[in-house]
Length: 426
Image: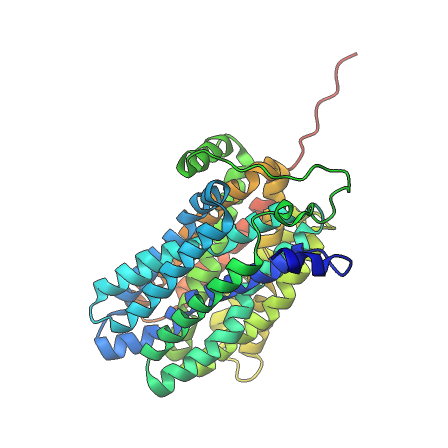
């Protein structure tokens, strides 16, 4: 690790190596979390499970994925990034591998709901925010945009491959591929991701040459750290605006489109491979959109960026049910607008969290904001399944998701807005 850091000196800052390793971890996480969407119909057909039962397991997964965020950030402060994330990846590899032997729906709830939900909650957005906070003084938005784009790249790489494997060999080989991928990343993490810049004799990227090396480690209980940050945050109106806007973000992305889009395509006569290919296309577009969003968040008003992101996403979702009826341009237009926007909300949200709460508390507070994101995702994953079972289509659920995004677009304009003080009387 030290030799690698020495080699990068004079070429580029080792912070970008840390981003690269974290990107790989988050990419595997994204691929793991995309897997149930291609398993839903095969599980329904082979094992006779209802879509509602499968959605319940995925809803638990999404909720725990978010709820783990603040505790994961606190554990990284207390025990270090490598120990915390390596433990989560080991659980992920073992749990996903065991799921190839599932025979009953409660086993899916236990493995994909509980184990995978907790493990991926450690290796996703909160990890990215923690690494960016430790390694970057400047260019934080760009770094977070690159890391957030890992979810798009994960879809781009994993979904078409997974759908093709499912179509040809069934769903069990898919989970084994994912388990192996999670295991392979473990030695890369151990060898190339230091805890902090000072471990390789560096300062944060953009930090002054005479700044002291940050070497401190927190020794408090992670649960205490997480709840202390929450107690401070809930007193701020901005926390609730960030929390509820990110609730809508999760509901309209991972929870609804990420979970139900392939099944929705099946309702309109499109194959799983076709649906997965459309999702992968949106992932490729999101790679561009989210990286660009990170660059923009370093330069422009983050409230205004979020307003446009949520507003355009809402319009795209309201349009989606009609897109299936337009023979050629319908779905490509939706994929273009929705794909560029998919998780473009993350870099501005991280930036605003840092602005409001400061770089020391921001990773843990952002973990609580991510909890809101995933509670929204759980709400939409379960709600989408219930509405589809009740009404026989996804149209109403899609419209609700779009309207929520429009509401969030208005809401975010109030975040971190400075109120002008009244002039003092002469």
